[in-house]
Length: 409
Image 1: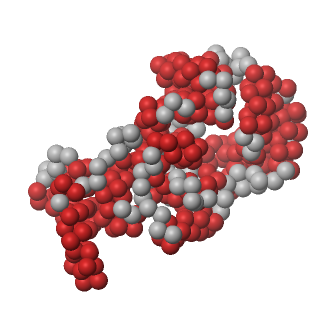
Image 2: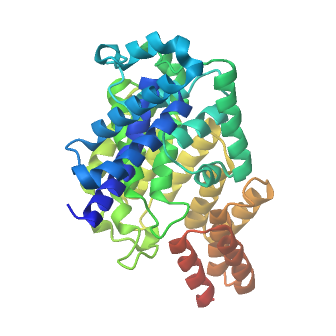
Image 3: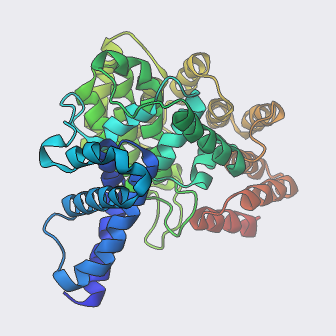
């Protein structure tokens, strides 16, 4: 294979396998620090050996094996670990490989449950898992939380320190412990999907690799646990995924929901999601993911924006606001109100949400206010709001959309 071909294969392996390799190495080596070092060593070895020896048949297995044994060799060379040699020798043996837990048939999902340890604060465990398992950057996690990046970085550092100082083991929890960790695990999967649905930065608005991975994890979660919220989350992701191809035009520019070609939506995914929502509702235990999926389902079933049942959407947001209140939920309800009752009512509602604080740095809040102002003919106010939104986003497709709106005023 040519040098360029090898480089492409290596980059593809990093893009598609790095998270899975890391998850497996954490299981085999017993900690994040050792696993991260092993991952880097494995890819460094690949960059050196693959051009000479060719691409292995199974890059994932090659990388795991190389990272694991190089780490063990390094440990052996460190005199301070001399007393641990017998243990390391046993660890290196093929018979000593930690057994996989059959109940969780996937290293990444297993690691998500392991990291969502109840000893860590909820925000810390989710941030840590997104960083180490999801592969999201600190900036991407910060956007998900509407929180400054340094705060997220400190949160991750403190979580790692707590794991180290209190010797919290990387043990896969028993099945009986999974429900207690389910909420955090579902949130991790959904935040990975969200970064794939609307990337924080980069040329493309979407990241299919993250969306696909989150959906894969969601399917595994549904198989693992008979929980309505797992069904709701998978349905929600499938409904968004059904529209992904229509969210940008051939030039990569953002296409709003009202302008999307609904005939191109993936009806197979929509039907699958509808079935999952039905199963979840049959449990009579309604949670935030089921409600969000129900809202997305109303959009998916509408023939056009004008024919959307906005009253039903507002009613669902009212329930969601009671179950899981947040500034973003309030903002989305305000936008739906504007669609049902007109831009004046929408603007009043959006101003009220912004007045409560929490969304000052959320570009979509300013963009939503700008849209209502534009529709009301409040040109100068709309220009100011679009400008605020533009200053808060780095995503090129979103920037081009906002710049086009400003140029039209």
